[in-house]
Amino acid sequence: MARMKFICDAERCIECNACATACKNEHEVPWGVNRRRLVTVNDGVPGERSISVACMHCTDAPCMAVCPVDCFYRTEDQIVLHDKDLCIGCGYCFYACPFGAPQFPQAGAFGLRGKMDKCTYCAGGPEENFSAEEFRKYGRNRIAEGKLPACAEMCSTKALLAGDHDAITRIYKTRVTTRGKGDEIWGWSMAYGGSSKLADQPVGAST
Amino acid sequence: MRNALGIVTAALALAACHEIPQDAPKPYAGKEDVKPYAGDLFKGDKAKFEETLTQRSNYQNEYLRTGSAKQP
Image 1 (cartoon, each protein chain N blue to C red):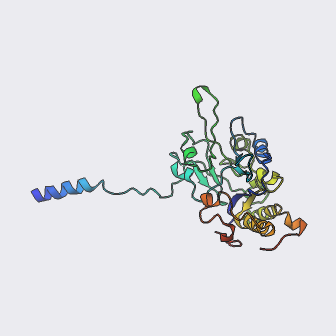
Image 2: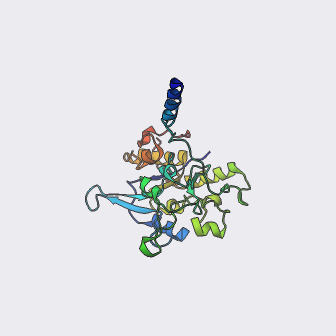
């Protein structure tokens, strides 16, 4: 069984915003909602690093734990999705998420908050696959087409890796061995538990 | 009689002294999702679906093209 995860390689990310643009374009995400965004630390000084951040589809997702209407579910491939018909836009998930992934459209008077929107790992939602309703609510369903998320596939430097745990840790391990640095995977222990060190990841065996 | 009343009172008073489990998995209350491999493309073949995704994942490894990687 596949365990879909994201890895963002801070050594490679050049802050080009192609991932965020690809996501916006693929799903026709409205203004003010950013399913994926770039975060830069030490901007303009030596040691500057950029990270592409979105929902990491956590192993023990805090958004699922705090949702008062239980609108979150996990697919067979460990992708965390939610039912927009059930969401009440309370914002608890936003406060619980360590990555700031949940987004809320504000399209009304008095800061009216709409239903939560977040990265779907390009896996759509609980509607018929490839239906207009699915696209309107959740965006395109690339996973059902046998494709990976648009952000990762569009990444020019392949800093953002998406796919099954075994496959992407193997790629990352080859990369770290070849260049000889960047052993730590950003956000890994926060999202998936265990160690962030690549050396501690059991490559070749599902965790 | 007094003892019995005392026992009943104590039992009622202590009835609320238990911890509701906070970490139990919560049920999903929304609509059922369709499996991604259920459509015309994979016709319910999960193995083919996973193979396709793994193949696609490996396209992200440019060292496969250049052949210049050091093996871990």
